[in-house]
Image 1 (tube, rainbow over the protein chains, first blue to last red):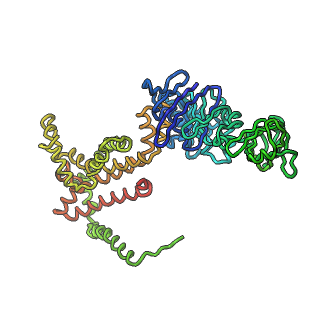
Image 2: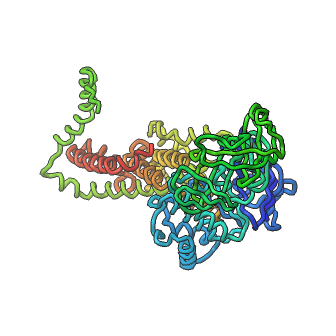
Image 3: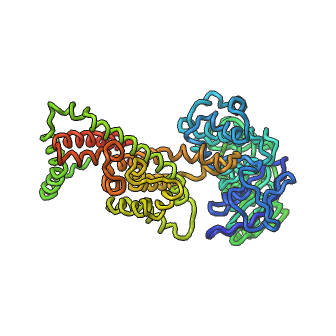
Length: 349
Length: 261
């Protein structure tokens, strides 16, 4: 259980965030660049002092400004996977993983053996003797994960774990990472600016903007009811899980979607609410995905209206107030929703 | 690809510039008594001077590494009032006339110097006109090269590697030994070579502070100066030796390490 209350002023950044995370879930701190996410991570890891607040992990106080407590980074049971991984360039993969064990006083031979076990567990033992420069992004990430986990931390922090990878490698590495995160029994906190990454890897989201938490909740809660324009733009997307076959996606919820990309396997289908069109009757013309539903909620948010449609496929649509009056849309009213196949972005889970 | 032609004036002036450097070398080669060169080189005075030069320059480099790396670390990592002033003072020997450095050393470590009088009275230690004095003089003029190079290396390294090491449980001293030092090794190497080369060529501070005693403080440059008055052909051969060593360093360093600047 991590319980952090962190207040840090650093240049133009004024960070004041509270974060709770239990070992049962993966928490993602999501926000734009410059929101203070990395500063939060560095504060929790003990790499920078906090100006006010308290950080507690599994009952042990790591920081308590009021009582003058600050446990230095090297004494915190926290493993960090840094952005760009920061594998030591002068050490081989196995030496990188053994580094933390050696620092904890484990004898060289045993540290090496245990590091090898970790590399095997993460399926990267074949590259044990390689220098970081010779590893691909995905391989480097696994070595970084092995290095962070080898010292048996109680908390695993990941800073933008997929940002250093090119798009083609991201899907596979994300799936692997999800598996490895699931097998770690401690508290897991991941920091990212990528909503898809957060939704794919985390159970709960904490959204940070300009140093403050603007919303927190489960992925489903946050995507369904973003509390600000900003959050809506960031994560207010429809995320549907299903099994694809030649572009036809059988949703786990029951219905079927047709995407333009001929994909196969377990996928996320991401549909932006603005891509969802609403109609009073079955629409004419080209859209491939049409279904009937009921407008469960109609929320005016600034110059847009978010309409949550319940039916074969539960989906959020974003339309203009003019469209709402044209459709004579009211909560509980019947409505047809349609999405063009080309508006459905598909990512392997 | 662009192929520029130099303006005529530039070509002429540049050629004169090159000649200015090459002519002294040619003069040296022209005067080299090739038939007796080997004998001159293996003459006992020459070998004594060469051996002493190596001992003094290597000892000065070792001393500079021992004192200079911590100093560079403090300049690069710690903010304290007067840091820029301290850095300027410890860089001064790079541009100070070496003879002034020698005089200053004499007033500090000489028998009647600020510190020297106590060393003499308390321990009977007299530094001037000893090999230790020659090492001190060489360190004084050469250490700034090491400090500046290592400081630049420390400033340009990615400190997040040190953060990563700390999160893995490494103490400050372990981080320094296992992460910082290996990462700045190229800068340390480059700084040490520059420092050593400067110490090898040191003349002014040494002759002022340590004198020119054969076998004790008469390093190769001093031996050359001495020989010039008595046996010019000997001076030529020794000069050629020093020139060959310097050129070898420059060629070996050129690509791999001087890029660090």
